[in-house]
Image 1 (tube, rainbow, N blue to C red):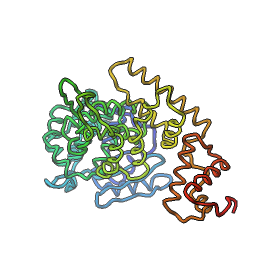
Image 2: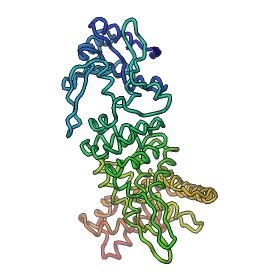
Image 3: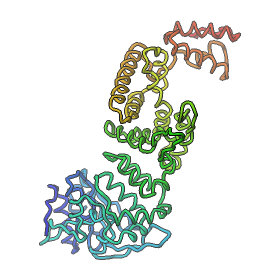
Image 4: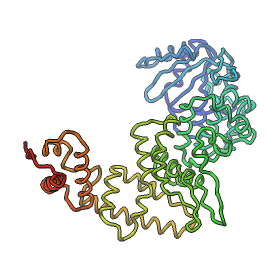
Length: 475
């Protein structure tokens, strides 16, 4: 019997002592044990006892120095407390049975064997004894340790039953494969394909939670390829699945936009852990199927896919139950602007074009440039090198113009309030016209964003519109 050395932390001895006092057997189970074997950091401990988990939690709290508060979830029969940075959840061993149209199980008291059987995968069905005489011993009834060495995701029971009972486990199988770079056992993967339609009974929030973990994987494309091959992607994110495929007319083919998108996503993942920058990579070409056209002279085009894609982002976020806040607006902005920097590589590009990009992008310019660099996915190494060198030039110009004009998040020094006061106007289209004209003049470089020069321009523009100055700016 294998023995595992638990981390140096008093919580384990405390739980062991409390379990002995209460008269129950206790075990550390699941993800914490898996991560301990894989040498991955984890501070979330699941303790299963053959008895009353809530009673055990309360006894552990009494024995800890600071008597931490025990949060009890009676409906689930679980309790949780914190010990420093560690979060410990307690539950009594149980067995579960499922109804066909629900993923909420009927739960009853069970043995340790029952509890291990209900786990999703063999690598999560490992336990470590906290009991006298067997303390530190590994409980491995389903060869989870062997599967870890083989880098394999496999279910403890027949996989069709496991996934039909709780369809979210199909997403979790792919998520673990993606996070850990494991294979999915062929029989287990076939069961995902067979049960994929069952994902429809799972809430979108829970699906998206797993999806985000796949997006944040070290090489996220692996998870998305598994989602696509299983048929799950077509059900949970059909617009992304539609990117797949190549059409050929008269010998002219376009690239497969699905696999291109995955390469862009992986490229972004190499340089950033930002979830929303990674979502920008996923969405950047999302409108290509809707904008695809074939022309005899120029071949395949996707004109306006960046603008169409930006307009699609809010609905896609809403459907996926992603937040409709500044994160959505960030993704929308990057989708809209992702082609702009490539247009600035020519030596003839004006400072005005650079100013406009800085003005529209604001503090997100660095993120945009990461996305644009990631978007270079040609198999021609020389072409990639040339494009990246062009981006170096663009970034140099951006820095130069930014340093001289300070245009990140710039606002004209003449505000709408000043315009209204100067000409004694109420909020109206005329105020917007004057403000727009002033902004354009500053971006074109014909007027400096300094008060006197900008105010003189405002008076001149007002005069052209038949307005006269009523108040001085100091009034």
